[in-house]
Image 1 (cartoon, rainbow, N blue to C red):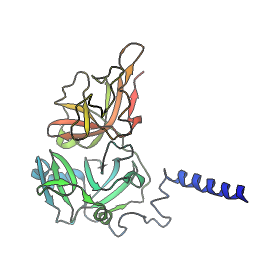
Image 2: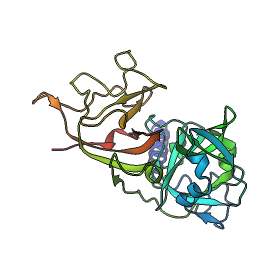
Image 3: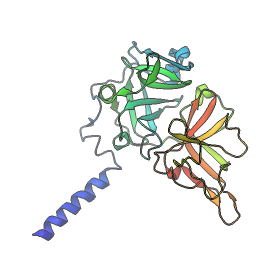
Length: 283
């Protein structure tokens, strides 16, 4: 009897684990969702590029917000979430025209907002804004700035579509590409090396060996000015203590391809790595 009970418990755990990487835990057989607002319709959907055109001065600002009073929605796929701790209480959504950050005061959103999941976001009643010129959807912060909406508000303003998971393909990164059009997009930087890689330095040490700004460490890449481009990692990221890629045999930084979200801070690109597998060693 004890053996049977143990088998039942183990089987249940395995079934639960198997379902974590599927849509089974968020989409029911009749097409409705266990999360969000199933009553949201598909009327008045605009592209992310059109949304930015609706509020050009707000998004281009250093710190502004505006209430969306029009009945408009966007549809896109999740390209990044908080799965490894480098992205905190926000996720990124992208369509064929652009990408944007959605800021929510909730942890663990990767549990139901998987990469590749398509959603519709009802914008009426939410706020849009530019945080250091990075477009975001959220709520007012410190009066005129943009910050996180409450999680119960978010649940009322989004729904899953019935589309299956489909990963967005990253575009090749160019430091000179248009920031307004490409900020928050999924990108890949090819054949780059970390200028601080020496076999010891890590992505985001918390021991004072690297400058910490806003809980994050900015690492430069060889050949790029840090005023133009940095790789930004939170000291709370699961891979913060990992060593920067370094060739121990030839005693030099390893050449890598880096995939991540190309956010901006004013006129500086800040690339956010989502997870360890975003870094590929170039053989």
